[in-house]
Image (cartoon, rainbow, N blue to C red; front, top):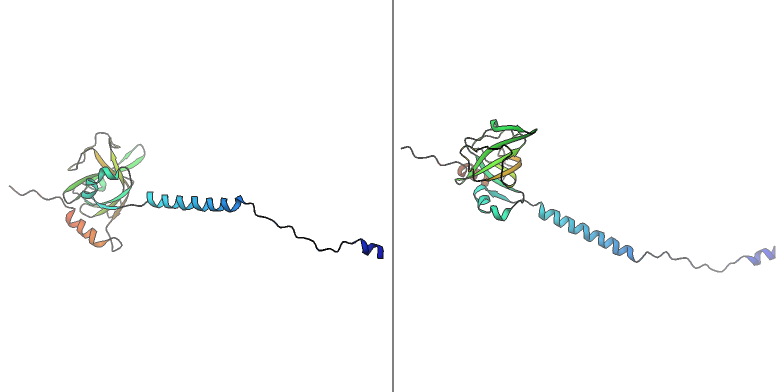
Length: 182
């Protein structure tokens, strides 16, 4: 037995150190940097401004095809009766007014129940120019200037959740001045 005991190596062992590859922290840093850049890009490209119709028309060239929100009141000729089906898609054509400036609107989908003339709306969408989804359509009492606002979201004033002072202002300023009786 003495012979067996003498053959056992009792010297301390040096533990093997597992080194992290030098590229792994750089890869983690790169992934975090890419995530931050994508987040910032997403926030910048998806931020929306809230403009009254008259200001949106003034800034049409600067806005380009960027999505934003526009405020105005549907004029008397605007009713949900103007909803038509074209190639299986539902469109509603109407005009909004703000401070005497008219904007023609093409909305996809069904307008909300509270949608009616003279009730301020906030529309989310972008400017479009060119042919309308319904060829030859003329907006009755509309701007008919070749530009139209394409929207897929209509918000109607109904409670205190919106910026009340701006919407009250829109209710007053969103009316077309009536011609003086001759």
